[in-house]
Image (cartoon, rainbow, N blue to C red):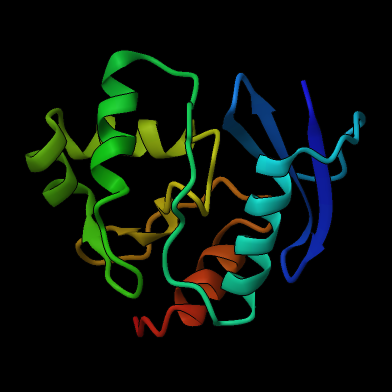
Length: 148
């Protein structure tokens, strides 16, 4: 599986591709480094995002997960840059409960590109599965101009 690692403000990140789609974005440096046109394009888009120049990602994504989690992640991709949604409101759109939405967010294999950082609790920030936890979530929300 081709992978491309790069430095970011959140530390090293690794993109993984399978059959012409991004399947993972992981914290840390990957073992198998191979530049493909898709991985290079995704890396460039993420660099622009971290520089405050890109607001959306037009990339083929194929996250591995249950049908329910894929439905939640698809609904999440509709949350615009700089906006947030509550766990309960996302549950109303995708089905399930706020708790099941939290479970889907915790298992999101392509964070940032599938913007789980935009999901907040009604009275709190919620969690974040990135290596830096809530610090990473605060950084990403701040980058997008979200105040909380």
